[in-house]
Length: 290
Length: 266
Image (cartoon, rainbow over all chains, first blue to last red; front, side, top):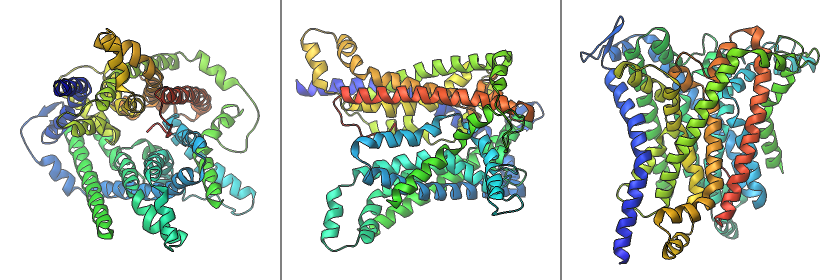
């Protein structure tokens, strides 16, 4: 009796999962397979030539501009990830360890709010903050710290990194917070009872236990940042354009969708490979410790 | 103590750009820079007379409402299945459905563009945007709804069925009221994400732009920037309102399901 009921329940639950599964299959897996196939075709003026060729990939490897853009994109994504996660960790730690239980969700709510509000306008406002007549320059001139406006903070890679690090902040804080919340507090007491200093307890107990959250934060920041073209377009100036801008240009302005598709595939493969290496290294580090 | 100061400084960093919005929305100058010149409500007045903006807002609201309904429906299926018995490959299928969360939006956009335009030779419309938005919103809906479904006591529905309700009747009269706050919260979040989404909408919009695509066009013309600031102020106020309602409902849902609140949408 009990067994039959279990079988039927797992069947019902498989039935229930099928609409969202089919949706993701048709609108994500199928289109991804389509651009993969597409990247082996070529644009022939207005038509697409469907003979299989590696020309798009050859062009990407031979013309230095694509390599340079990809390299800069990976550099920016890495910087954004490092900056975001390092700045976010203490905040997640503070909310998890130093805020009273009933106030925690208020703090998390405050942290997530800016993330949900008008992305485009938020990016544009960084231009207002970092610009020639912007908040930082006017402020610093008024208090007499500088005489000429600073120019290294807008229309270059620095500006792109600052803006992206701001945009992805909650993405980094939430997974780290969740991991910190799971840590059994008695482990920390035990470490200190056994004579560890506060500092050593943090590095030898808290940090390794929080690592799954840090890894999740790294992945959830690193992977999507490669696809952002709004921030480099608005903040990057001529020298701060990234691979996503090139993908966008190939698809919309230059009408060369197959080359754009090949660029998208190359970017995805690089990001996924780096993410996998990171996860493996981290796993080895954690195993090496235990 | 120093940690608290750091956390507060971090919050200021997070809110700094948004805090500037109303400052420039009410500033009587066409240049978005300091020093400020005077107070005006003209920029808000211009919003009322701009008909192409109104069309864009209508488009965006339609897309956001449809996205909210469809992605929450899919989210309910997944969250309910997630709370039920195991079946083969369950974890893998769940992970697959959550994948759009880490997929770069430009990849979602270009792959759907290729499928719709180049393979099926269909025109772009609001529905192409809706289908992509449902894809990226569903993982967020599942994350919120999991909180409502995960800790539901299955014996309540069983009791209703023992008392003669059908399976669907038991779901409707017992489970649905309990998870209702979660459902509304999930719809509000999906609505907010869709209303604000630009990267996908830019690739997939047909002849009539959505609101973010329209704003993107305005950002190139310095003269229209104060109007963008006014629009932004209204949008920020609106989304804070919606998110506050969503958060209150999410907490009420957790309380109804009898779970301690662990905080956070994700």
